[in-house]
Image (cartoon, rainbow over all chains, first blue to last red):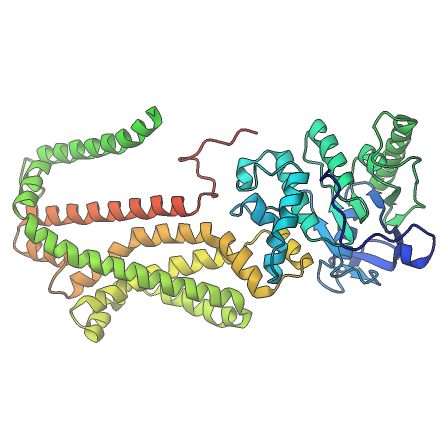
Length: 260
Length: 259
């Protein structure tokens, strides 16, 4: 099977010790110089998915960008980001494909931008794994939304970084395509440390080992929710529907609180 | 197929309409050929004087094409330099705008004085008139790269000049193409103005010459030749650009891809 694409570095065994988590402490999100959050403390278990939920405008995307090392220094963030620079791949809500490059060339973009040789074998393997082998030579405008997101996934995987940051990666897709893409991402990103911002509690419950809720003004993080079972979970399995309802209720409550 | 046919027929209908209007104006004017020769007279003159018109058209054409080449080259290089070096932009951009505020017509006599009656002064004029739209459009394009693409490149730890080459430059090509279209449309103005001020050949020279001798039909034939050349050049550049930039959404040439 070509479904699983192993990362270059084998993931650390899961243990409560320091090397098994990426610790971020004292991170203050800022917007236009004004603090948007309290000092945030965040620990990402290595090789697991962490989802961040929260009302819109609370700073979820800012958090992700800060961790990706984006945003002008001193403006967006204070504090340590766990030395993540150079170890992360970033995938946004919009696929970010360059419209003049073919699917394959978009996948090879990172290496070309760094002036490194492109690993053609790995590229072919990844294109095959996401089911885009036949479309490798097409430009993005010839693809459907789901295919474009698959192509973006290939570009992200080609980076072969231990940490993957995703900002609502599947939110623009129709529900069926979204389920497909979630499964595909869970399979292909297995072994990597993933932080995913989403506004969809079901997506968080399906894919994440841990769920964080960012809320309030200034924003803070609650203690993580750890759903039972191993992702990707079926949307109907066990008490997932009940948890989904509870989580929605919670978010609704927080949104109402924030609007007051 | 019917769409292709419509693309060919539509300009022909427009042309026929214009010719009719021209003929109507000719009639309403009392068919006085020394004021406004009709389309038929003009065509006859153009046919009779075809070798002469061609001679002068070749001169004007060379001026326009050389001006286009030079103006675009300078514009592209300037925009790249301005986009790369912020200090340069702060110093030079106001100068660029001021240079554009001076009408080319005003400095045409100077250019003829400095560069002579030959090709050089006309090419310089066309270059001047083309330079600004190309620079402005390309610089705009280079400045307006999708921030997401730049963010991605940053996370990928891209080298700055590779970002310019692989992301910002291709992303700015559609804007450059708009600049080139404008440049193509205004290039003949530069060449003809130059010929009016002082020349020994070219369609502008021929028009001035014919006008002075009351050969209004020849003047119209020259004007028509110039228009024909300008439209053909614009069409060629427009189609060429559309072919070179196939990813740019173009409602004329492409149906939306099915999902």
